[in-house]
Image 1 (cartoon, rainbow, N blue to C red):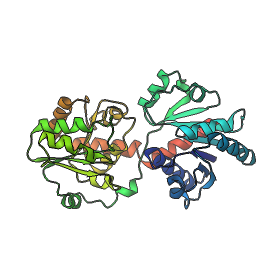
Image 2 (image 1 turned 180 degrees about the horizontal axis):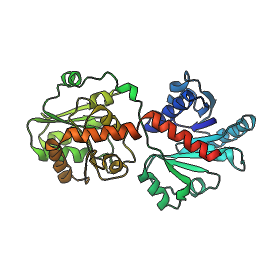
Image 3 (image 1 turned 90 degrees about the vertical axis):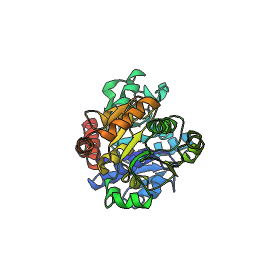
Image 4 (image 1 turned 180 degrees about the vertical axis):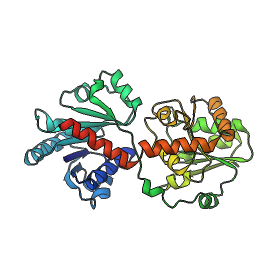
Length: 346
C-alpha cells in the first residue's frame, strides 16, 4: 500500500510518537509511506532516516498547505491519506474535497467533543481511528456514525525499556519503602493535587511519592503546606521518565480526564502495578484485575493506594503484562492498522 500521513504538529507529543511508531512499522512491513509535515519538526527529525518520503507543509498557512498538497496528490498515487491532529485534519480534508481516489482516515485520540460539523460529519471522511473505546463513545455521542469508527489502542516503543534495572534506578534517585509515582505534565486535569492529598491521608512514614513531569515543581507549595516535603520527591520534566517508572512500586494515574495513558503501558511492560481513576480509557486498561480503579477523589485514591500495598501485586502484574503483550505492543498496533487499511480499500 501507499500511505500519506498528514501531521502538522511542531512539538513532540504522545500523538506524534504514535505517528512515528506507525510509520516505522509500516515501512518495516514493506509499505510505501510519505509524511506531510513541517520541515525540521520532531516528526521530520525522527523519521528522516526511516525510509519515508516527505512533503513539507506550513501549520500557520492551512489553506495554502491544503492547495499545495492537493496538487501533490494529483501527481502521486496513494491508497490512504491518514491525518493527525486538528490542523493536519483540516489540511488533509481540504486537499481531498471532491476527490474519490484516496481513502481518508482521521486519527482521534482526545476526549473533547467533536463539535466541528465540517470535520467530523463530512462524507469525505471514510474512517475514524480512535485510540480507545472511551474516545469512540464521545464521538458517537456527538453523532459520528459508529460504523465509521475503528478502535486501535496506542502503543509504545518497547525497545526503549530494554536493559532497565529497577534497583539501579532506586539507588540513583534514593527511592525507599513503598514508592508511589505519578508521571505526567502538570495541568488542571491530570489530578496531581488529588494524588498529593491522597498520599497525605495515608500517613505512612515508610512510603514516598514521586512526581515526574513538566511544571510539577509548581506543586511544591502544596507539598510544603501539607507538611510532607520529607516524603515527596519532585523530579520535574525528564526525557527518561519511562526509566524512572521502573523504580516505582506503584504507578498512580490520578487524572480527571484521560483518553489512553501511555504511562500505564510502560508500567505494564516494566512490571509495575497501576492505580488509575475511573475516567476515559483508564478502565479499559485496568479492568479484569489488571490494576485498581478508583474515583478521582483524595479519599478514594488513598483507599486504593492502601489496597494496592496489601494486594497480590504479582497477580496484578501478571495479568497486566499478558494484556500488554496481546494488545499493546507496536507490532500488534501496526498489524491492526494494516488490516484496517486493507479492509477500507478492498
